[in-house]
Image (cartoon, rainbow, N blue to C red; front, side, top):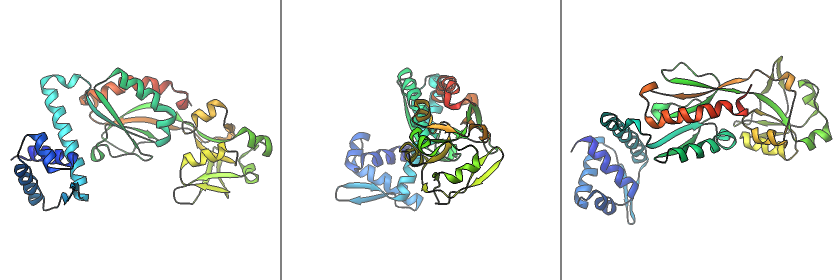
Length: 296
């Protein structure tokens, strides 16, 4: 049996969680399915399935192999469609990586409208703060904040993300507005750091080293603390777009803000990209460029 068919059978077993259920879906005998999986495990010299009284589950190696199979078979299906002329029709799953808060603040309304326009496409979003590896992670497109490393991919500019310092109006009414970055030393600051080390806040004329009263491991936690009126936090314009737009947070020190950073939509294959990728570019890019969160 060829490797393509082995991957198909294994993926059905992985999704079904049962050899018997997979055999029924594949219209094969259970013994045949067991033999195919056993031959695959022998060839790879790895245990892919863990047998138990309630069926089968994936080993760590099996989980990784199942995801690789899914990506490979999806690419094969796309290649076959391109030969038959169906490559022009947007179908299948579109995987989009982007920073977590951008999904909530910017993307969701655009994604809902896109899916309504293209009913044969499904969308999966992945939270990525850093530049993702598109091919290795099976990602079709990625919104990247900041400069892209040297790459063979394609990038479409969307706009800019502005560094902002902000606080709740109630906090500012009680503690006053900082007149310059150095005045932040007299304020309660909320830092964000996954390591617990807050570092510095950068402004156009340099950096200010602060001793934060609160350090949060995620940007959303820091923004929530600022909304609660605890203190002043620093974020990018898209991360608190709705709160700033509604007046729940107020930007301060705007004349001292550091330079904005580029926001880009990154993808592979250019004009040869799958129809679902090209349809998303055509639909979403004008809307993202027009979004106020990306205006410098």
